[in-house]
Image (cartoon, rainbow, N blue to C red; front, side, top):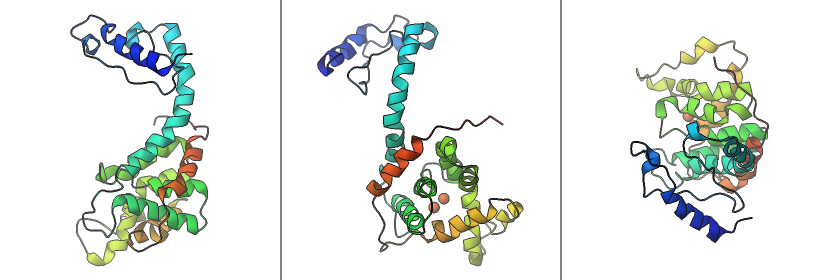
Length: 231
Ligand SMILES: [Fe+2]
Ligand SMILES: [Fe+2]
């Protein structure tokens, strides 16, 4: 067992332990180790993967499980909550509130917990990668959600275009979703967008706070991940 002050000293001492190759990042003398999540944990001895020993690797395998159990859901939520006070570019509410409101609508409609979390995170990349934000959310959740919700996330922005058909904007095609007509997940995707996503933009709606959804996010990421073969 190592107490925190000792760990801090170790972190400082690590500054001079970082190898001697001036060409590599390990040669930076002013280096500072990040803290460890648990005071009883340790750092690997080696810096570069090429130098890893079996004890280094086993140490990482021991500490990785509890680290992810605590941090994965928390850091995913932080990706969302960091935008809580951000401005809108014209919508009555910002993207963070839109996400909360979408999840609130799904929850109040009686959707299952997975779908509520999917609704909460469906636009998590809306500002940072607008043109592929559906795929962004789908990748974030891929190992923990159904094929149906994964399919929906990837295509929800295209399905949303039908709700703007009356504008006749040449920038998008309201019928683009029709190429998937007849697919087993077509109706679900249309319903998600129609009932929750495209409606969740109201400043006066009684939206549930993020704290309400946090345990759901933690439970989702605690699921045994399903492996996804590379295509
Ligand atoms: Fe979206
Ligand atoms: Fe949305």
